[in-house]
Image (tube, rainbow, N blue to C red):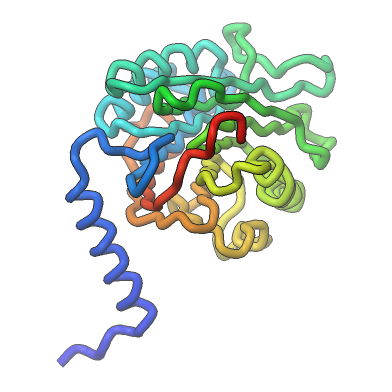
Length: 285
């Protein structure tokens, strides 16, 4: 006779089963980015190692990322270690797979301290982070917010940045935190989740906020990524340093690592979320 499951494990199993049933019961295309009422939101985090400068570069990651987008049909795609033109390519991939609504994209170059300009890929394009988001047509006035962290590792020429899109029914952000100092990465994480995200949400705080990125911090590490996640937020990871964090009131029902077939040194991380949210009246976001 097997021992009884721990009560916390039983709760997690029941919650996961309920989430799966809810997802299965929703009609195709019912992902809720920008929608009113209960729905699902699928977020996909990818670090593509596409600068051309790192040892993990293969030149095939963007093509594989387009295939993953076509297969998984996400609502939000957060992108790290990319060149500016990669966002254009992957935006086309998301437009092709998602009918209805509006697909918007944004890019933010990492800074290069020595030149006081952008960090660049080997092909000359600015290098940094990107966002792809599918919104309902009612989200007619999304706004892009971007910035450079006040905390930086001065021994690293790359200046780390954040990028967010604010819309009526969804706020999404991405970042790639310092990989040369865990303490600097922790300070950047605290600034993003403690100051940037609340500032972007503003008076539209009822809309869900989703943050995806390679935070270069681990659960159980020193320091621990969980120490910079606000109370009530939900967090998942890929077993390593990629994280997806959702604001309070959002249930992350399912997570899955997606094989990138050796095109980059990170798997993709896919999260399915469920919650009820409502679009605020016009002029309130």
